[in-house]
Length: 301
Length: 301
Image 1 (cartoon, helix red, strand yellow):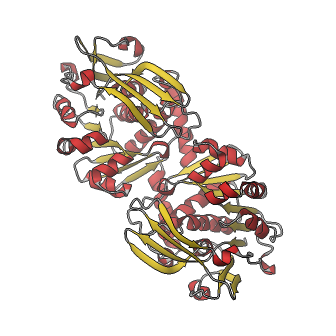
Image 2 (spheres, chains in turn purple, green; image 1 turned 90 degrees about the vertical axis):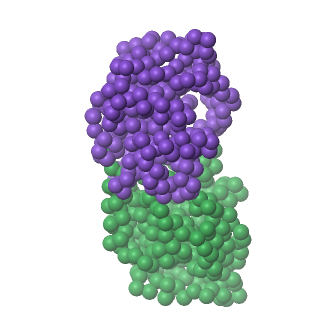
Image 3 (cartoon, helix red, strand yellow; image 1 turned 135 degrees about the horizontal axis):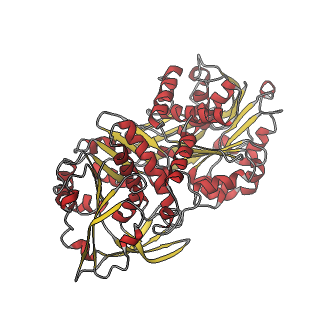
């Protein structure tokens, strides 16, 4: 089934204890699309400035990623992010952000994308996410990412958006902040009460927890990683693997969602093994499938 | 098979956001024995002072806990611990400790216990743990708990002990500290290189990871708890359920260890639902078995 993503394209500079990657390709829509393309065709919506040094047609060559929704805006500059990961590789500091084109009007969704059934709205201001969502006719399953900034500053917009979506994919600390509850399981329940049918809470190296509004819960550890070079894009790769698998199957029942979370988990485990897209471009779908089986063996008793 | 535990008996005062429990029964050997007694007979080794207000024969009445190894030392005072849990219930501050009888010579292991096959040495100075271990003739499986204090101050003693045991059960932060490695999976591998065949690293509300020296790994989330009243004793209840199940089956292969970790996990989930032993005394083995099946369903995909 058709899958559309809206989100950022960035010029990233990432510093980790393992090295520095300067001015590399990043952004939520980029990681998401690369990850999802192992599972299903992806319709891409994003905007860059005329300074963007990357040829996305080349980046996605040989993959079923439709770039009709890529806008190159003249007189604008591309989003830039610089960050430093600490020694535990699970926490990071943002050194600088230049929103640039992301502070302007969002790109528009091409006419040909409006019949998309699976929708991922990557992290941006919730009012913009809602504008983008309104351009899709009748989606079957809408998943959304958000962050602490919007929970603190744009809570009403976010709450309005939550009433219109199916699934919120969020970090554990953000879930606690949004629910105002330190207990993650209770926080998940409270957020389900705000609108979505499904919430997936990401716990970094400790995996994820998914709950739905029928009182079903699924918990999955992260794939055990001894080689973490750069965690940037892990969350969007997780969402990409997850949504890609849902779009591939066309299903959203809880059992399918469980497998989708597992696919998201292993897809992200490849992303963090190298800088930028290096981890994902080095592999094929059989590598992902094989790691999924390993994860199953690692967690069954 | 026979199971012996050596460890503390304490008079605890615990403050949590849910209330205060003053001068209640605590200590590692107490929680361990209560938890393990659902699975197998327990041989108890511990010492209190003449001020101890608890009648352990009554506490363990109706349970197969042998108190021949309980020493009531005249002119000594019982171990006391006062602690406060913070709002997230995953971190705590020790407000005061009175080691009292724990700072004296350890109790001796009764002659009748010396043929014990499964041994749990609860947290204390590693030199004392080794003294206790030397009193067991030919154990099949020795598991040990330790803490940051001994890693920092008694590292040589701890390393000597690690060469003589089968399994280390340790908190994730302590594993990172002992291995001097922020990556938990790598840390586990390094600790296995110090001697034990199995390491189990506890991650609080994020579950646990077990690795052995044949490169096998098992990861299990914690049982999802919305009602956490008092986490005191969770780690020792985990060890009790785990070692109790091993002693019940008499096996220590990796598949049995996986199920043992799951039993430890669900046993601990009852402990944290009430103060002191209230969570464990309110249940029976069928409650534990039922929650084990729930945990299996929550984690399978």
